[in-house]
Length: 152
Image (cartoon, rainbow, N blue to C red):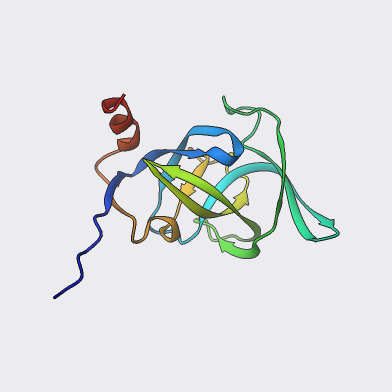
């Protein structure tokens, strides 16, 4: 007998994502099945050596974003990754791990830190986070918000 297939939640091409460990909620995210790793818009990204290893210090988002609060973050570097952007430029990025919430699912995410100020959405959610968990319906957007309002 075949194993029962896990039901995958449908998400749209744009969704709201929460970062509960960072007290950051309802951030616009573009779902990008062409990108493997998820990325997060930050500024003042700087590596810092500490006794227990290498950390990255950064501010989330930027002063022009409505939820920007100048809070400085300092997290262990999970790894470094060379990323080729959509314009063909290669950039070495720091990758950190944190919890993210989409719908009622709390997931561990790897996020590359980069300046996305020229991009429309501060978060890009890649295949590594959505694979095996969600199906993307490119004709829809903000399904998480609509579902949350229906259950309120």
